[in-house]
Picture 1 (tube, one colour):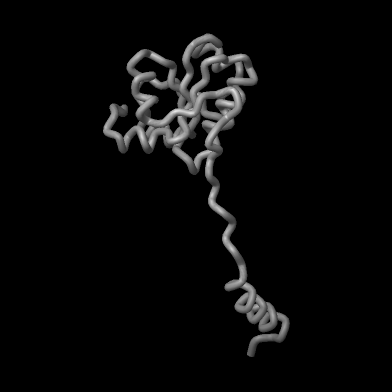
Picture 2 (picture 1 turned 120 degrees about the horizontal axis):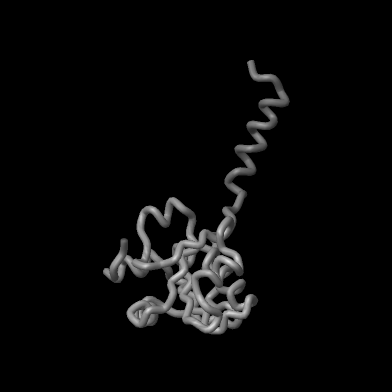
Length: 139
């Protein structure tokens, strides 16, 4: 026999669970003030011209594949003003990317780069998944 507080809790959960609504899925901002939002078609010519690509994804994602020649500055532990300045001058074209529209890292990093005085920041919102889907080189 189930004691009444446990039974009450089970009944409560059965009644309330269908009423619960899932939290909305994260979607990255379409723009970052001071940065230029680019898509994959615009990222490729920047890549071809030698722009600095900065991958701010976590280590596991980086190890699984990346845009060739990208600089890995993991957002939470490595991406700082000093680390970005070691990779690029503030007047160089810097393309910041992560794992696409469900990833907040590239928008946060692009905003930081702008605040640190980088004047040619490109926010590659679609990021590595779209680059890979387009059939562009990966390593």
